[in-house]
Image 1 (cartoon, rainbow, N blue to C red):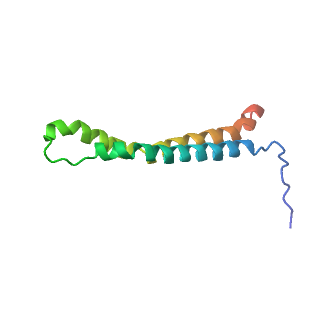
Image 2: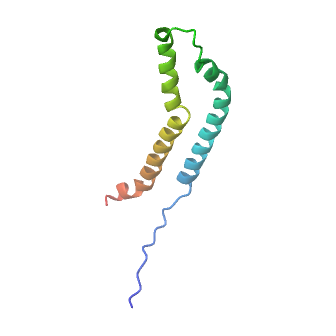
Length: 100
């Protein structure tokens, strides 16, 4: 049985992964803090006052629907995808520099 020859790769670095984890940690912490700050705004914005005319209430309802989609899961997903892309591109640098 033939043994496989491993290619020696000595250009590895842990820094891209550390930056990735640090960025996601900071963003998670900021979203957690800002979510606590925004709770009173959510309670005012998501008010279900039945005495308000539906035509007058439509912009507020639309904005709150958009905010429910975007915050916080949408922001975290966008940052997660950007960090993933940056990490993959960082790992590909050596391949692009060598031309292969």
